[in-house]
Length: 416
Image 1 (cartoon, one colour):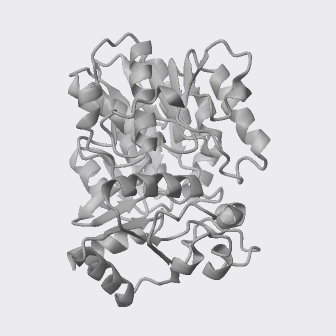
Image 2 (cartoon, helix red, strand yellow):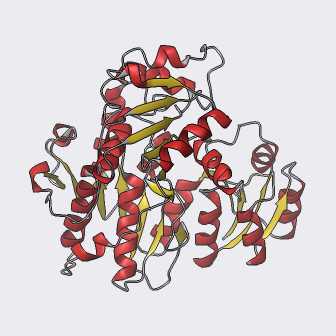
Image 3 (cartoon, rainbow, N blue to C red):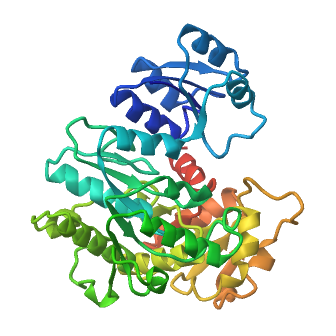
């Protein structure tokens, strides 16, 4: 099969192209800009064009007919390459449809990690355990890892481990051998207009899975009547599990339970203790400075609880993510910030916005926060960096949190 990837330099598409290449498929692609990913893939022999006016797609198709045009949900429907692919009669699909096809073609058993929060860390834990046990494994995770690429195909593997995202109903492309559900709340209102639709999608995902392990306190009732679903009691989480943060101990328990269900008899407790974490999940950037991807009230509370196990004094630098999402969660900003001594609130990171929605101001977003007196409206400037540096010098843990530019800003300031 000859596959063309539009946006091949992206964090999701790039690793998928490598997986397809290593699985034996012909791969090429394009991106608007050169990046570390495109440079590395070109060095590995993958034909890549910088620019997306359609000319490279046309020439590749004329040289050898393209069987599949793969793109992300972020690609607009009037994108020149997508329009051309359809005009040429090339089948088009989003990345999850291709990945599901590869898993089926290679007869791999899918271990899918799904849920509103905690997917990335739990997927990373599974990959880490397989690697430490010396078991060949193929996988894909939605972040970069310190112990391997974010996606890989091993021809000797029996299992494929995948961070299975519910956004755009992507996870409904899959039929897992084992599904681990970390948590179920409500998110992605652009895909699921109501909470009932969101929960119904998780139930459908469960019906498509051979085995499911979830938590009794996470809408376990939506799986009523499904014989393949096992719901764990939170009391089953051992307080002695060697992981920092209650949510990580729950994630570790899911991993342990799932591996036992698959017939693994090794005691992995010690291996979990050595798990180095994944990028941007309470990632240590420097002494007393951490970065975290969390941008939802549930994630904020969980990460601050973890931080409290590390330090008695915390300063949080928070960047809300997407104005459209702030309308959904602004009334949920209440007690989640109480573990932080001081909070510096940054402007909302804007992406895929509804132009009809006025931008919510920080003052509008913080009105229900219980420790509002400790919230300071801030911006990306020297003044904020001075606050961070003084706190670090005093031994205070500083946590930058958000899915926008907060992480890159911190890294750039450290490197300056």
